[in-house]
Length: 291
Length: 247
Image 1 (cartoon, helix red, strand yellow):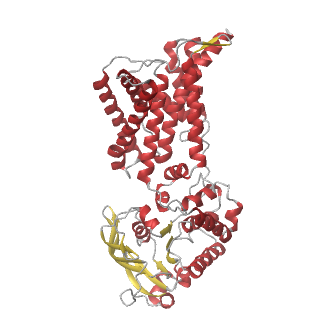
Image 2 (tube, chains in turn brown, orange):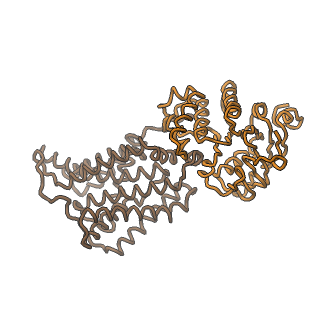
Image 3 (spheres, rainbow over the protein chains, first blue to last red):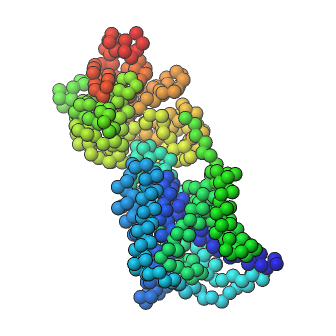
């Protein structure tokens, strides 16, 4: 039994790390514009399917992955330019609805390009499982955890240590004041969408060898990443990571101990419970603001 | 100093002609003319809803002008985006402070210098703001949202100063502050103008205090300038006294 629990934990943390990356993408765009980008899951799907397709053209795996990330970043920038920027100044809700529409367009395009088939990517460094105190650990899990940890640290440093990151935060907490100190809000939006798309693509590529990817893989991953972000306190990068890991582990435990059919239900029930008792998320303390 | 830009050979720092601006059907600013000479201290007074804030938003590029022109040091800036206007030296201290609440005092100030690339100059100006407002130096790591109203006003001013303004636009800096604090804020405004030659356009409902430190004043009503004269003259004007100075 302890081995089994450990196994669930390992599986859960791996999946949770991917949720964390998707959640981080949500946090970035939310921080720049107060908008929840519901096309975030589609960036994940695009990253995975593009990497698989590019690998099929004979590129090496690292090159295919890199190119897939770059193309997804371009898609993110394009989305920002043609759909988000023209709506600058519109209410946040309108922009959120625009992102839902953008998600549908991206899914539709993927359906045309890749059909309804499931695709998969070979593992980065083989499939020989490692033994971890009785639980098996796929080498791919180490890739997921390592890359996620690195990206989380980079995003944190970006917001805490660089003026550019703080300018991004400034845009979300007061757009007019940000403009008055000379921050170009459009540039910040492009930056946020580009980075989020990149993070999403990385998440998709990391998980592609573990799960099957198809044109609609982004729907569930997007929802889980969004859940991770709100559990942690939306806009809080570290919160998104903790939320993602919690969500992943709970899902794995629920699937293993109760029934895999309830996996998603357990995850969303958890989100509801957190929001019921802690409406601003685990890390999102109500912002202290005096007027 | 001559206040008529045509008579003077010096180019005005800010010259507004025939400016119209508004929101939807509301014409908040109508055919407005106004100018500020380099190093000049000008007050713009008017009641609530006169269109003062819309004017400042339009000058800073936060809101588009419908007609008319805005020139900064002779250059037509009417259609410039906000960040370009800041880079040209027109910095605004917005109404209600508008500090970046979750960020630290120091981060707020550093963001004020966002468009500048002269690291050494920014460091000097940061030290200067800390000298000007020692309380900000004490609280440099504190979140801006936890400061008192007066401290937030100082922070908002410091943030604008780090943009190295040639002209500082101040929107109701006295609002909600105790008289003693208002005095201190206004003393700093005068000092900035006298010691560093920063042009000042002070927009205030508190007409008496604003006109007391200004060289020249405009009175704004219903989106238009209804009177302009040396500040001392406006302070003594019967109509102005009745309308804005409480008798």
